[in-house]
Length: 316
Image 1 (tube, rainbow, N blue to C red):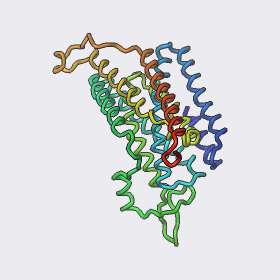
Image 2 (image 1 turned 30 degrees about the vertical axis):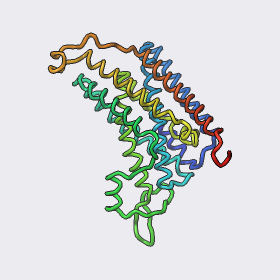
Image 3 (image 1 turned 90 degrees about the vertical axis):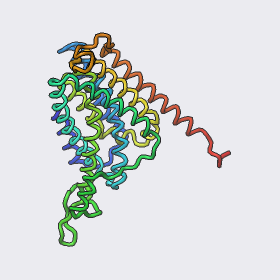
Image 4 (image 1 turned 60 degrees about the horizontal axis):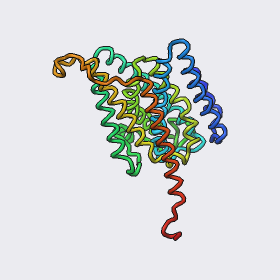
């Protein structure tokens, strides 16, 4: 898996260009097919349960990664990254996301192994995130520089022009940082915020760190090509945030039920497991996730098509 990421990075570095739709479609198809085959291999070497966990986790992480693209589009547009350099910038952002998620997975696995009640926190956090997604939907998306980036601008001399992929350049004999440094920091901090959502979500579907990391890696693999492939289609996925909210709330409740089954907190049911809490099989989880994504995608495309055909007041 790491070899694939390294190959992808070297390919981009040696061929900086704006990818065609055909190229993006082929690569996205390759990565999606690879994920499907990987799940089949898991079914053969492990069992159907593990494969189902992988597919459910991969669908969830992939849908959350598509949501990441909304922010990536805003960041690259906000900092006016040259089109022929966007592939390299996206690849750096994906590698940062992979490293951060790897760290978060290790931390999450360690917390779960020691404190079973952490599922209560994960569950309520995902439900709160789902509510926030619904509340914020429809607001104008605008990237606002966080504290770290604002502090960086005050401390370091940053020039307004890019110099390829260089982080530092020489202007009138003076060494200065390029906007590329700010872009990479913006992508990294954004990746960290999204990892806070995606890691609890995947642990709600499987506790195996290998499966957790695999789903994240396959979800990030084709993200660079998916960015160029979707293009204007992102604006048409109007109901995707609602679908993600439903999925996150569903997994949040699943985590809370799991925590109730393994409860050891003395102030809840006297420290005893809550037997009446329902158990949600992983096959049901996969069905719910796939169904919600299918419904929201189809509904979004239908709604955008109707809106496109509705004449404006000036046309009537």
